[in-house]
Image (cartoon, rainbow, N blue to C red; front, top):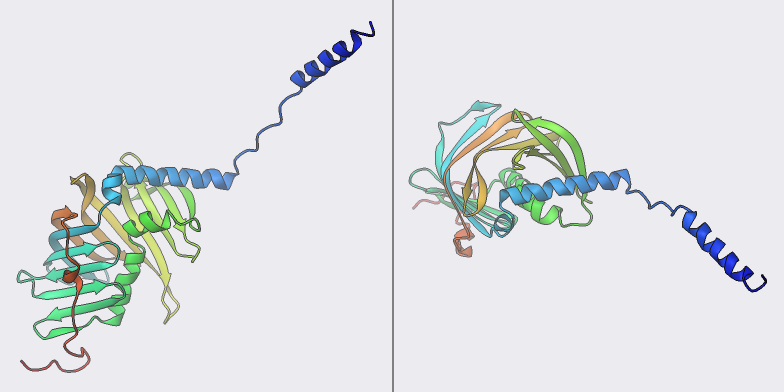
Length: 269
């Protein structure tokens, strides 16, 4: 009996361990679950836009017609435009049928070219373009999403442009925030919204973009209609006729030399 006792005790110990419930695994925090859901939706959005084909866009050429508004009312009959963009910070816009009015934005510099010559872009207009670039969809997807300092939030179901959507917000460690409304069925972005505080009057302003009429171009789902809003009022509409990607737009297209001071009379030719 003395020989069997240790084996009996060992067997009882093993049995007790087998009957003891395993320690529960730590549940995922609610905020992390929320962030995971937001990221999953953003990943679906990227795939819907074309996946790697979308992420690999280096330059873009657009042609269409643009309409400007003032306080929500049309202020023009529309102007033909040609736009060349090169990621991340180069843009050239040629306006009118003759393409004789040109705006160039290269990094933090901007130029306007007319029959008078080339002048520096109006500082207020340049600031607005640079700000929209920093909140643009390609910038958000390529930079914000990959920054570990960016927080993601799933805000729930919503309605955008009269379509059912899922709402996701991103906030950087610089307290920059953008909200995306993603179509509940196609996962394409319907609307993008961001706000900023005017350094002069300290008022907070909101800018929205609504995307519509998606068509596939070189494996990328492309909105051929984009409407921009400023503090709730429509400010610009753009309708595209043609789009092409990765055509090798040269850097020289975004270079310019100032020939006169825009605050002074243009030199006579």
